[in-house]
Length: 206
Length: 206
View 1 (cartoon, chains in turn cyan, blue):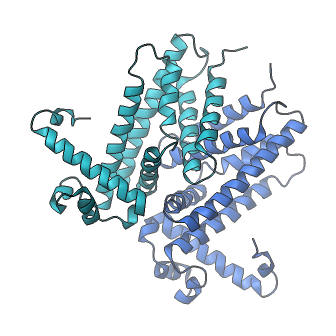
View 2 (cartoon, chains in turn orange, brown):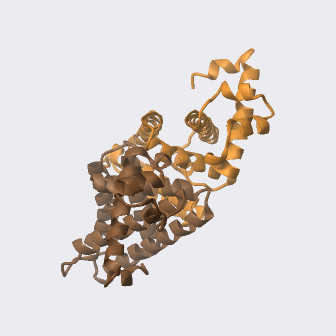
View 3 (cartoon, each protein chain N blue to C red):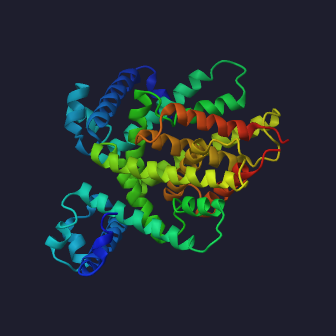
């Protein structure tokens, strides 16, 4: 967000370098964990100067924030692309977004490891916590909106509280994702649990 | 576990010191975050020697493991005490255990901050991950067992898969707890979401 204009004209090279550094950072965190990664390592892996890396982040917290923003954009883009076709019902969109929270492949696994590191650090950094909370709040809003759309389309029961139902779905997917990440359960069972919950949620009242 | 025998006889003083160090550690982590806490700080706060602290843990990872074991025991004890009265239906027991994952007061908040730090660190430490996974597996088993009891008592639908239902409840409570911890939602709404889920789960089929 806000960076979109930079991708045009001269900004394209800038965006390419940003992507390059972000990918190097994600790979390093994934391999060695956040604590073991230095700005110098990231510069070496991205094959850019230390100064170029410092343009994007100077501390561990800024590094995490940079990584979190990058993976959020990437996740949003994946959802946008998969929903690009016309005529996607709200439930499919909900399911698509929630599935992003389950580490079903290496890319999502790396992303969710970073999100977990970010969560832990935000507990002792009010600034990081603010960023995280804003992200959670806006994702929650999107989920509630989709549930409202489903209600309008007659897909979901009208007496459902969209905010409450969204909070449950979000927490469930987030919890399942963390469980898979630590090796408690598989992506397959996590997605099955999620689908069951969606089934119950979308079942019209008897 | 395994330490139970030490509480008798001479071991009582040992247990008292262990408790003292654990409380100091929890207070320090809660105040300053895990990264900022040293063994020396813990010794000073617990008013014991550095050697006494080193008897229990020598590294950050051992410190976390010690803290995690301590809070697990404390949580288990709280659940045991609140369920001590005869005639508690399985649903009440389930609810009581799951509510431990929601930071509804300062003590649980401190405990869950530590659990979150532990989760993040276990992603880069296979040894810590093993401990965490074992804890998750056994909690999942307890939840599934209670759901089976509820089915036997006619409280829950017979066609429910206890393992699957336990996985959903566990992930939901865990996710809600993390959300409250980072300031997304309140303990009250989290518990309400949990109760709604239990209501749906325990509703006998139409």
